[in-house]
Image 1 (cartoon, one colour):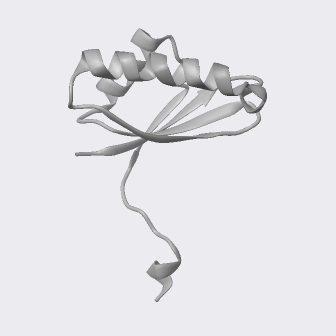
Image 2: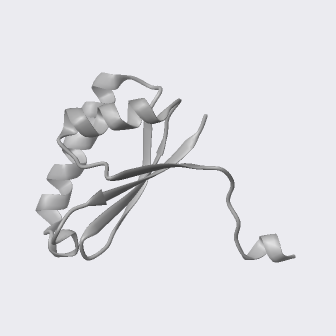
Length: 90
């Protein structure tokens, strides 16, 4: 199944409290549970004013529907074509 990187503009994201991040995570997981097993949240990276999320889903439309239902921005959704890391250089 395809993997996606979602860029979410969220001013002040890096200053969110543990409780706020927990609430966002709970909302996301609740929506995912209702949408069924075809979409999975892998993890997210929180930066100063953005959150970058990694999801597995059959298509971009499902990613955008999750964002809509959860009330999250999805400013850019990009399908991951391949991964590279230091081992790639060997």
